[in-house]
Length: 272
Image (cartoon, rainbow, N blue to C red):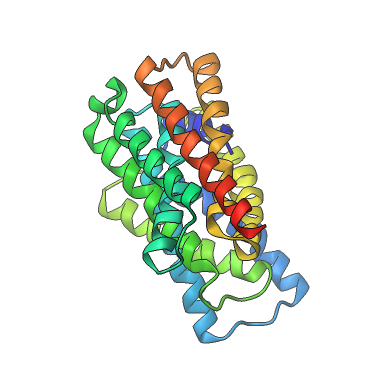
């Protein structure tokens, strides 16, 4: 969701990146655990449990890296543009595994990667090279997770989401501890409200809907939200946070979104 980037920007005023990402998942776990007990959900097999935990570790670690990029000072608008490339990476990784993309998809991948390169020439990215690096790595991790999610055996229903969030929570908590992150002594009301919003809407509702889609359709199609998010996030960043984006950043956004649209259109045309 495009609003999640502005939410992360607000929450980072008090909460460090990986701790913030872990707390987002903790809120979901607290909600889902009683629901699963009440429904008497059947326990998955060992293999399904391991697969779900490892998948959650990979995908939510990628989300933590995206938050880290914003902690390094990259604006929410630029972060959303970088994250939009998840569609490009997902298509590229599927092609590497032997699922040949169509001509339009391939063109979209090339254009999208060119957009990522162009984005890194934007002043806001050049001023934060560490942030730029993790903002490439994070969406890549999310794309790999999306790609393998329908290639492995996972539990059915909500228990799969619960186990993925549990794996992500433990991984993010460990990384947070290794980085020496501390819980804020006096978090601001705005930061805490943003944390609550991030836990309930983009994480609990958004991730559940996303994983349903990614199990039903090709990853490049499930990740198609990427061409909407940057526009929303840039507008919110400019209007609510006073962020600015240069002509280079706007051009990079247009190029990346063009690549994403070509990937989606090419996949739909090939399927038809």
